[in-house]
Length: 368
Image (cartoon, rainbow, N blue to C red):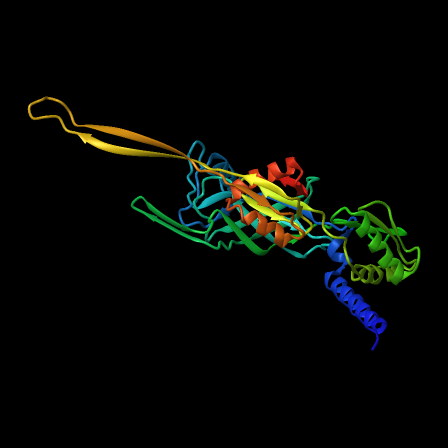
């Protein structure tokens, strides 16, 4: 085997490896894009939970709601009498109405206390209408709450496991009104990418045109792709299902560093790179020590026992050695270089900001 043959075989192996790598990173169109107009809708309602074991509340709006509910049921309360409902609580009920939901379809609902109720465990939600943004009622909710938690209190001590002011009812609502979604009524459908990218949009267009025929798909911009539907309306559902399951390899994620200043979390994408730079970072620590003493007056002095506090304040400035970070070619090298500094997450936020201003961090820095 001569050198030419060896070179050709090596080139074939390289192409095979690249194809396997691309296939491993390929995703279905339904995972990177959605059909315009196919969306869920948020529902919300105000309701009352009853049957609590003394963990309810006596808020004014809770009392008013209970009186109004009993009045609608034909129960008249004596005028001027103050009622206390310790086994009831006012709640907000939320749910998501999925696309193409039909009348009679069950929905899961989340029930959250809006007053001072200590626990919703063991409660029952009374029939609650759930409204959309337009003010119309789209579902009715009712059922027994499931609260994944427990709590107990006695003699001033209290123990709580998980959150007791929020519960969930599986299939606790029934759809009463449908939301029309005109998908497939016209000649065109539009796919919207979840991440704006010109390269990915063109790859989606190429994949659709290759599988469904030239001219089927057209990229309107970096996010929206227009797809021509079949003339026969009965074939459009199968057509859209086939398009959603086509494999596309998205473009590489842009170089980005996400910093959460509240929690100190730092997340980087694979494309982040560093230019060589030198960093010195020192920590300033302040410690305050209190020494509490009791001053006892002498015998027959007529004084009173007093407490004296002596505070000692110590300020230490830790030296920050100048360290050189080599240019990182991949994410592993970047992480290794930053870990060499030995800084905690909060210090790392300040370092990343300074590196971005100096031009050493070759990525977009976003602080949330």
